[in-house]
Length: 251
Image (cartoon, rainbow, N blue to C red; front, side, top):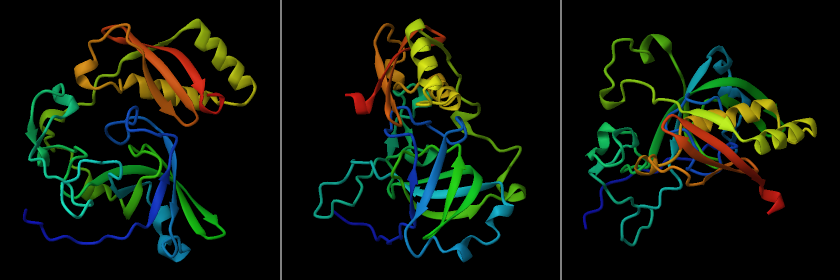
């Protein structure tokens, strides 16, 4: 097997997010306003490196698909097996298309690119950390680089977007009476906030199920958000229902 030339890129930090697993994580950035924090590895948290960044409302994040286990059978376990074609969820999970025409995680370099809102640059004893909103990265995602989003060059009004011309259709989300009662008690006890509940509902509205299972009615799926396992099911073509929740520390 011929091994392609490679480069080493430093990991400058890690994402701390309530999104714990791939299942339930938005498939694109800015579909759900999930809050997250980027913590930096010394010396990359040096405050001088972020001077001027607060003037920008959004930033580009270059990051690694670190949970991708699709590696080649070589002596170097870090070499990713090359897939020329993949099955995007937007095409129903059955139709194949060239990997470079998608944002699939199964890429030669395992690199992701996302634009997110920069909320705050927080000073810390070790430098700074960034508060962001709208990411599509799971907790622990390595960050490779950060660049400011520049509207006049990065926003192209008449761009064509191939098979992903429009946002995915959101499902309606309902709650069982038991879930409503549980959430009310948790909010009163300050174990959960209304904002967190709203985010969970928005994540469910994106329908995290794989495309080939989105016709299954009455099957219960579980999505993990922070310290909670969220159980849901489809009750009709347009609606998902939040049917249960379990605290991980109670398991």
